[in-house]
Image (cartoon, rainbow, N blue to C red; front, side, top):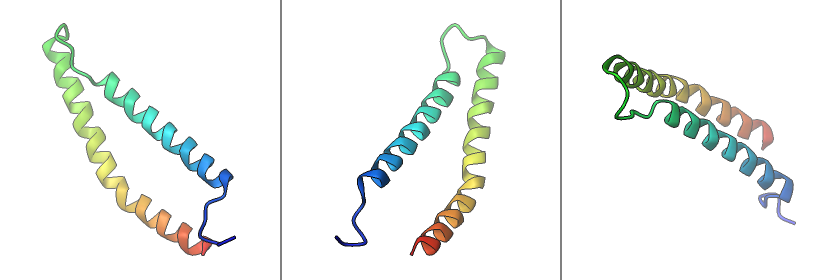
Length: 76
């Protein structure tokens, strides 16, 4: 067996966490979806929440990339 091949456990873990991340994003998106019956203030709050969410994701992305980099180094 080649060391580069994924075992069934590894693929199921990655599928599990990918599914959890997708569910978290969908919940975030659903909570901040602008509805026609929302008032003006609620629309402003939802847009602000979406902008803050995107900003936090951009700020955290280098740290996630570094963590993955070190994880691959440690695994290798």
